[in-house]
Image 1 (cartoon, helix red, strand yellow):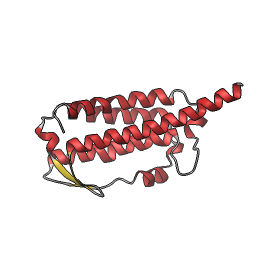
Image 2 (image 1 turned 90 degrees about the vertical axis):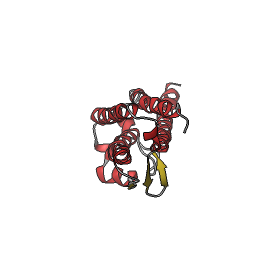
Image 3 (image 1 turned 45 degrees about the vertical axis):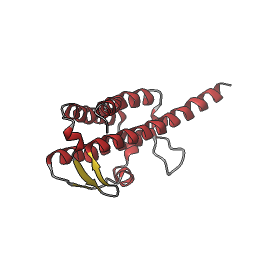
Image 4 (image 1 turned 180 degrees about the vertical axis):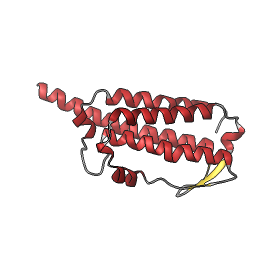
Length: 166
């Protein structure tokens, strides 16, 4: 990872919560909870998933990589959490705010790190040895995937709304 890359990645991570908030502002409550198929997350489930992975996955992994020598970082089963916690029954605003606060805290902590700290490593279950810098890249890829999913959901409702006006 080049020296500028962590800061670019951190900046991208910082933009996610705003992007998510803008996307969901376009959806009604039933649309937020709607799924196109049983195998995909609704918009609300995407947000709750991002929140819980941020808190229980990324925050813990970042802390352990910084505090421990080559820690074993357990996988977090997001699908299992979604089913167990019944995300579609949650309220949108607290979920968005919890994700925003957890991400802001991580961003603040990450911005204070030295270049050497981004090279610290841990072993992520199912992935192998990763540096903190690589973990940040994985976070960004994960964010981008869920933002794309939510854009698809919004587009589906935008298209449906436009078609009903014809």
